[in-house]
Length: 346
Image 1: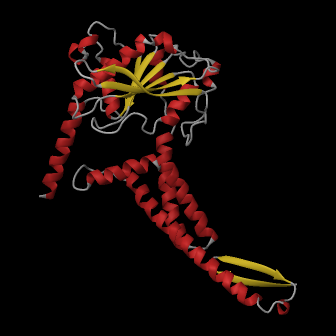
Image 2: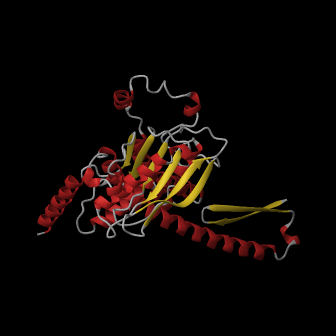
C-alpha cells in the first residue's frame, strides 16, 4: 500500500491507496481537494486573525484608565464592554493560540497569547476572593452564615465566576401588569412579575428592581431574564419596574414611581406570598441611584407621591449595582475632569 501526502499550510492530508497507477485521475482529484482545503484554511485564518486583533484591542483597554475627554466616551464604552466580555476574551485568546499551534501560524499565536494573559489577570483581580466577612458580620452578626438553611445554601452559586446561571423552569412570568397611575393623568405604570412556580417553596421575599437608564433610556426586561429566572426559582418574587424617565418626568417623579412600586407590593403581599418586612429594592446604574433614594428616604415628603403621604414606604434592604450614591460629587468630578483635560489640550 502506498501513502500519498499532500501538504497545505500547517496541515497534512494523508490518503492511503493500494496502487496509484490504478487510479489515473487520483492525482488531479487530490490536487483539487488540497486547493479547496487551502482556501478554507486561509479564510479561517483570516477570521481568526481579525477576531484576535479585535480581542487584543479590547483586552488591552482593561489596563488603562480613560479620561472623559475627546474620544473618552468611546474608549470608556469599549472598556465597559471589554470588562463584561473578559471571560470570552480569555476564551478567544486561548482559541487563537490553539489555532496558531495547529496550523503553525505565528501571527495567530502572537495575537492570542497577550489576549489570554491580560484577560486572565483581569479576571483574577475581579474574582479574587477577598475577606468580605467583616462587613457581613457587622450587619448580620458573627453567625450570619450559620443561620442560612442547608436548603438555601444548596441553591447558591458555587463560585463567583459563573458564565451561565443554572437553567431553571420553576418560575411564572407575567408581563405588563399595571401597578399604579400618575394622579391627574391617564398615565399607567407597568411592571413584570417573576413568581416561583407552585412546586417551589416561597421565601417570602420580594425584590423590586429598577433598570439602568441614565435616567433617560431603556426599559424593564433589559438583559435581566437569566438573573430573575434564577431568583424566582429560589422562591423569591421579582417585580421589574418600568418607571418614568426624563424628559417625561424629573428625578422626583422617578423616585415617586419607585415608591409607588413599594406601596403596591406591600398592598399585595398576601396575594403573592410575600412578607411585608421582607421587601428589598434595587437596581443598576441610574436604577440603583433611584433605589438608594427610595430606600434611605422613606419619610421624605418631598420625594413621596402625594397620594401615599400616610403610607409606610420603608423597605428591608437595598441593592445598588454601580449606582451613583452621591450625584453631586459625581457631577463635580466630571466637571473637574473635563476642565483638566481642556487645560492639557491648550
